[in-house]
Image (cartoon, rainbow over all chains, first blue to last red):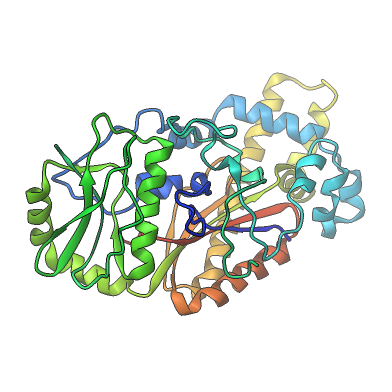
Length: 150
Length: 237
């Protein structure tokens, strides 16, 4: 139901492209061929990408957050229809909005402005700020269709 | 002035570089460093280069253009050689390896897939399936129960979340693997339980995308699949 298909920066030739760089940032910065004899520019400020994940997982703060989320959970609906849990998202006050905002995009091509974590038409000087939830946002511009696009 | 390296192609690559520019505040004109069999696409490296949005995008753009015309080995962002001569020696030093890799990647593109699941959806599944979680939950709800019990509940859930997420990631990868030539798993993040790249033959792109669609359809709205591509094969060089 919720497949978002996107290119990264391709923009039908208009140069640059708004792109969805955020989702492939780690590939560009962390993979790709390296020649050992050469130096790499500093990635200071971008390494949050990684730290983010490891530190957070096994901490008391995380445990308490999970406990709280679990206690807030509305199970009523779940008990009635355990096999259809996924249909109940809309009933949850907390997740209702995000759940619906992405819509059913099967096969469609949707662009993400939030690509590099900056709020809007931010200055191109800004360094990309990885964000935890960028993949959710979804409006926007300069996107070339691929495969099934128009 | 140091030389910024974007990628490596075979000597027979058409290199349509007229309308694309490199990194820097004033986008740098591209040039090539050629050896017998290989070509490196490079530019001058601007002073004080860092991973700015503009520059990461320029790097990616150059590689997409190159990839569109033939096999290309994408460099990681930000690689600087002291000068062009050093680039040429690096190509010579690893010539066999680079040519073999180019041949292997010819006709292939990378697709990157991230999948997330709404947390509440997963938590409901855990509560439904774990009696221990249900008990602790009853004891800690409505401000009753001590701090220790909350931590215990959270820890239990945390373990369940990890176990279920990695099992599902593994299962999903296995189901999609047959539609791709190779697969390269990345680390899951706090939001995406699956983070994986696929090397897909160009003539297999359609069926690969359909396979991803099928998985996405089956799992419903609590899941978000984000498929990005075609990309230069960063994960397969």
